[in-house]
Image (cartoon, rainbow, N blue to C red; front, side, top):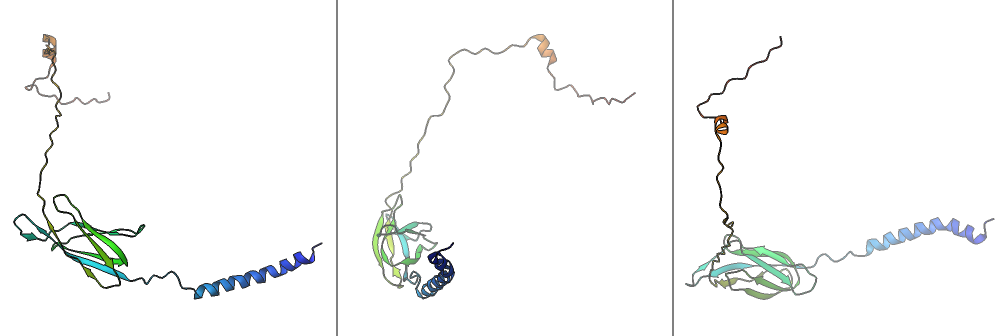
Length: 178
């Protein structure tokens, strides 16, 4: 026989569950989601390379890296275009380290502070440190044999069985049933 407490809980369980579900949905509808309207900035500029004669050129295909100073944030990369320009888009607010490091060039580093959506222009001028070419040759020959070699000799029967260029091939014979 059911007790009064268990009968009460069974009859009120469903309406209470519906009420709690409705309350959660109403409260959740008014709570803002995580703020996604954080200001994002743009960092752009031009890279120029100065050679030993102090002549400047705009190189294409140089890789730049933008590293956040805060731990756990992803870094960004950009490549210069045909006129030496680069651009980092949608950069969250924060402090960053802009780096250019490549063999044959002086390294470049700058600390940038992204605040708001106003673009930051950082032009970069790097000098060539000299182009060096390294050629490495490795020996890959097989050692010569120091044993004497003998040439094989063919006897008269073997020579006769060898095909000659002047011989003509005969067409195959057709076998017909009798």
